[in-house]
Amino acid sequence: MLPAAPSESTRGILHFVPGIALSAALAALAMGLGNIGWLQSHGMSALTVAILLGIIIANTVYTRLAGTVGSGVNFSKQTLLRAGVILYGLRLTLQDIGHVGIAGVLIDAVVLTSTFALAYLLGTRFFGLDRTTAILIGAGSAVCGAAAVMATEPIVRARAEQVAVAVSCVVVFGTLAIFLYPMLYSLNTHWQWIPASPRAFGIYAGSTIHEVAQVFAAGRSVSVATADTAVVTKMVRVMMLAPLLIALSAWMTRRAGRTHAEVKESAAASGAKHQLRIPWFAFGFIGMVLFNSSELLPQSVRIALVDVDTFILAMAMAALGLTTHVSAVRKAGIKPLLLGGVLFVWLILGGGLINDLVARALN
Image (cartoon, rainbow, N blue to C red; front, side, top):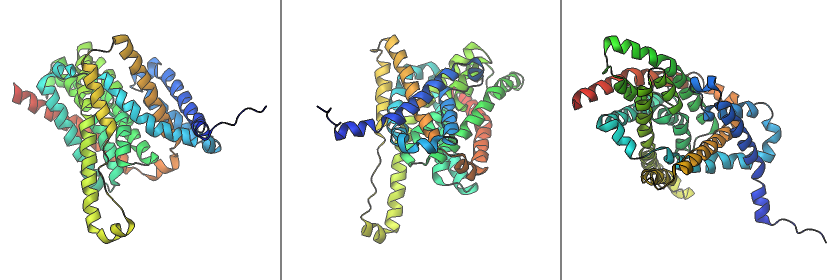
């Protein structure tokens, strides 16, 4: 008797397996490479390594595999990404806010909003970039680097090459910050542009450097106290990702509504509708932060889930890399990098001014 043929639903599930397996294999390799001391000291996290591995495969052998793995890769890039953003909340607690005080929270908020607004205005009006690329670079620079770019991607429905360009920008300048900020600390001890204590410089670093790994690497080059304060300040800044995504979704929907009104007849003919794309995963992120703050979860379980989350996000980044072609990134030109550079300068100088003004106002 012949074995029963797999059901349609089973075949549908199996269709995703090769792509998920490939993304998982690249994520595992990235996490292994991410433990190398040299990469850690240079702020190269597993997420950054994962997208680089994906890009290498995409531009060498992926075209021969695309028909088999495409569905699973897209699942990793989209669905697993949202799951990863939700679990990211396990890295944060409401108690973190208390550790940096009102000054740290206010500094984070002002740096975030000013950087994002500057990215959009300069990107679209001065550099002539498309709106999506400007928003992605702004989110990565303003919040938490590659993770913020990936979290913003579903809201703006970005193409893979747009996401890759944004990630490249925040990685380049965030890595540069690792070497620059210790020198800025030495200069600040003499000139005191901002309060010269390790804690104050930690708040400055955490509120202005792109990636969490880069924040830690730069802060640790100064002192343990600076690194601790910098990371906590950075995590509070990460916590602001959820309201940013919600506000961004509402703003884009309202903008789409205005455009719809201008072309009402055409839209009516096509039956087009503009509805608020609610980023439900952002609410999941907030819920996970609140749950983590309750301390109901055993520490060992929380640590294990954070590792799982890192792996899931690495899978999403690897999948992104697998759908990114260097030719498309090259076509974007130098302008995205210039925007990232201007934002980097703003974070250093404008962020320093914000830190100083807020510290003086609250003292």
